[in-house]
Each structure stands twice: as structure tokens, then as C-alpha cells.
Amino acid sequence: MQFDTIIRGGTVVTAADTFRADIGISNGRISALGDDLGAADEIIDATGLLVMPGGIDSHVHLDQAGAPGIVMADGFESGTRSAAIGGNTMVLPFCLQQKGQSLREALAAYQAKADGKCYTDIAHHLIITDPTPQVLGQELPALIAEGYTSVKIFMTYDDMKLADREILEVLDVARQHGALVMVHAEGYDAIRFLTERLERDGKTAPFFHGPSRPIPVEREATHRAISFAEIVDTEAMIVHVSNRAAMEEIRRAQQRGQKIYGETCPQYLVLTEKDMDRAGMEGAKYVCSPPPRDSDSQAACWEGLQQGVFEVFSSDHCPYRYEDEAGKLAPKGKQSFRYVPNGIPGIATRMPILFSEGVVKGRIDLNRFVALTSTNHAKRYGLYPQKGTIAVGSDADLVLWDAGREVTITHSLLQDGCDYTPYEGLAVTGWPVRTMLRGETVMTDGQIAPVKGGREMLRAR
Ligand code: URP
Ligand code: ZN
Ligand code: ZN
Image (cartoon, rainbow, N blue to C red; front, side, top):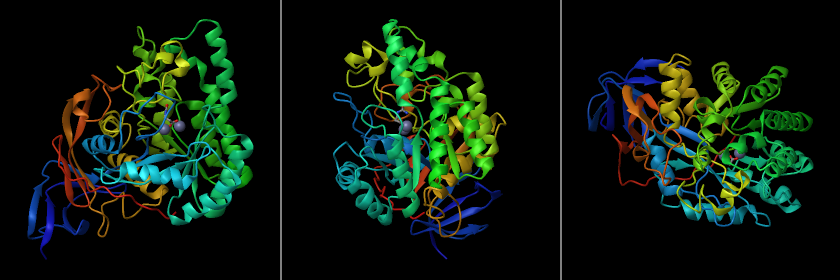
């Protein structure tokens, strides 16, 4: 048999196994695993490298509209380019419904923004901000049936938060039609109350973003979201969990037998509230929600990853430029932390940080690394086994990984549209050296190929 490509000499790692095998690729799919596979048009030497399923980042924001005058630093082109630099072959960005907008209108706009621009495959989650009877009764069920099987809802943010009754309604439609609801669990009223008190006391610097949404704000909302899922008798994913109390809410729900899933992100492993405590506006570079916490919260997030309380590790890439009035230095943001756009970049650094801090430091093994960065995302969001594993018949979405490569993270390596990385100067061991999407090389040694072959995928759950 003649293959299009053979990857020879590498160590294959899946969520289950680590083994020596060559990989034969035909028509964009894995068509053989074995020794001495024979001839191919292209032979890629992977001696000394790990060969893993391409990363799947199921929580990224690209070209998403924000407050007036605020512009996201990455669209689909730069965002997916940076994703490929970091070893990813698929990302799941959000399609935000503006108030008064139909879901289909919103989706068409995001599809137009993404069309022909992606270096990785993509699949959209829907963000529901306006759950009208038309949206809940007709649009959402129809879109779920077409393959848009995940929706995010917010318990905070002025233009996005849903009332408790609305959360229950969305959960119920998701239950009936087979979608997964992702919940941003921070309580709006408590944040407003604390923000106004801090501002009255003249505490307006970026650092006070943290005290405006402390751990109980997240714990309370997490508990409420889990209770609502229990009332409706459905599943839910609590995203970007930052601390022990929220992690334990999820763990208790899982122990009771509820289908509650958890996600955490790099910022909760390697950043703390101290990062927001910098001169001038520098702290704004680290403002995201929930905010980075303290060392016990970091330890709890590791525990959640080690014990399976968190099944996915995502970036929550939400990039705003720093030296930019349309970004972190927004004029109103200089008056109060409350106007600093929330979110930090991290699409390229997610896998290297987890590998270095997790695998190299002995906190997790290689197979859990693959599960947390790829396989579990594919399984949870309806992409498996086409995506997220190395098996005959799966898409040849692969990352070749140099486990010993020492890199000091610096922004110029990442090729995103932002002007900084919150991880500047972080030394990591382990780095992606080749990313392949459906058998085509997209990135080699930090060079991006001019192939924009990323496609939108629909999903069944
Ligand atoms: O601060 C964050 N995380 N911004 C992104 C939007 C979100 O809530 O995921
Ligand atoms: Zn969120
Ligand atoms: Zn997010």
C-alpha cells in the first residue's frame, strides 16, 4: 500500500496508551499504525518525538464583539494561526447572540468572519443572551438538530447575564434537544455590589478587579448553576473554574451522580491575583474573569485535573491588546477596573504550559495530558472519534512534540494578534515542532504553511 504520508519513528501517545508505531496517512485520515509501513509520497521523521492527537481547545473567543470601542485582538486567521503554533488542530470559538438578534443571524456573521481564514478546524458554540420564546422554541432546537450542540450562558456581565428563570429555560431546551450548556458562573448582583463599594472607596486600579469578584461570588454561582441543572435533570459544563470552593462544588455534584463537568485554564495554574498588582495599568494585562487567585486555588485546580473533576483544559483565549485604547487601555478602563475588557490571550501557550508544569513536573502523566488537551474535548463536544485520538479512520490531526525542548515564552513566538502574553518569561520544557491538520502540515518549527484548510464542523452528541 502506498500512503500519502508516513510519520516514522515517533512515540505515539493517546489518552489511553503510549507505544512505538509509525503512522500511515491516506486522504487526510490515519489509515495504518504499525512497523515497516512501506512507501509514501512523504516520510516525516519523528525519531525522538512524541506524536499526539492535535490539541482541541474548546473555549476560545475570536472576533467577538465587546463593549463599544473595544476590539478583540484576534480574528479567525490570527487566532487559528496561533493555535496551530501551539500544537492545536481544532478550536471551538463562541458565536455571540447580541440582544435582539436571532441566533441564525449571529451564526451567519461568525461563519462569514471565519470562512476561508482558518488554519485549524473549528466548531461554533452559541452564546445565548436573549432567550426569547422564538429563540428557545424554534431557533435553538433547529440549530441543535443541525449540529450546534453546545451553548454558553452567563450569570454575569451587563449585556449577557441571564435571570435564574432564563437559565432554567435554556437548560430545559438543551435537555430536550440534546445540547450541552456551558455556564459562566459568577454572580452579577454580588459583583455589582462589591464594585460600587470599591469605587466609592477610590479602589479603582486593575488590582481591584480581583476583590470585586472574590471566591464566594464564583462558589455561589457555581452552586446555583449546579442546582438548576439538578432541578431540570440535565447536564452542564462549568467553565473556567478558578478555585478550590468552586471545584469542590463540582466534585460534590459528581459524587451525587449529577452529570456536571468542569473546565479549568492555564491562568488558574500559573498566575495569581498578585499579577494584577502592578504599577499603572500593567495589571490590566492579567484581568480576566474569574480572576487568577492564590496558591491554594492553583493547588486545587491541579487537584481537579489530577482527579478528573475537570475533564477539559482550555485556554479561554480572549485577547485584547495592551497598548491600545480599543483594548486594555480603554479610556474608561483607566478610570476604573470595571471597564477594562475582561480576558487574556493563551491559545498557543495552553499545551506547553500544561506539558511543562504538569507532565515534566510529574503532576500528570502523558496520557492524561492528551485527554485534557484533546480527547476529552472531542468526546464531550461530539467530535470523537473523528477528532481527538490516533486510530485508524480518525482524521490525521497530529502534533509532533519535542518533550525536551526548553523554551522561554515570549510574545513574538506566538503569532497571535495581541501585543503581549501574560506568560512572558515563563520557562517551559516541551514544545510543538509540527502541527498537521488532516494530514497536511500546518506548522513546522514555528513556520506556518500557507494552507488555510480549516473547516467548520457540525456535531452530534
Ligand atoms: O475574562 C474572560 N474570561 N473573558 C472571556 C469571556 C468569558 O467569560 O469567557
Ligand atoms: Zn466565561
Ligand atoms: Zn471565555
